[in-house]
Amino acid sequence: MINFNYRPESYFNGTGPNTLLCKLSYPESQWGEEISIYANALDGVYYYEAVDFYGNEIKLNPEKSDQPLTLQELIFMTETMDVDPKSAQGNIELTLSGIPLAESLIYNHLEVYFAEKRKTFGMI
Image (cartoon, rainbow, N blue to C red):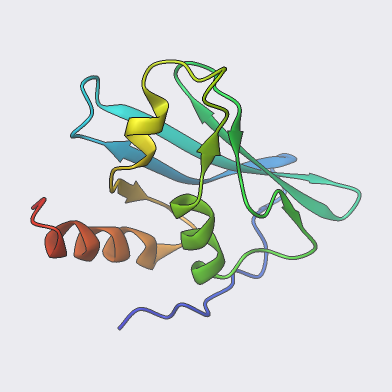
């Protein structure tokens, strides 16, 4: 059973001011696109950033928070990622319309959630 209310106590273990929350892979895309989502801490606030191979400006919702996200909030963030079509590179809009394979050391059930979703849509 997936605990959508799971919230880690912290994203950081004292080794630096940012951490990888999850890596999303889109195997159906032509190039096997990947997007990584990071959390950066500044003045007690977590700022979120998505990075892809092309350097697209990926909009995240929320952009920042006062505490770590719940699993449900992280899923919402990943499923609502968006880019400005005028500046998009590498068919990112098509990639974002897919269902990713997810990896996360912080959110253990993220991988399970997206695997089940891919299975439901016949992608596995």
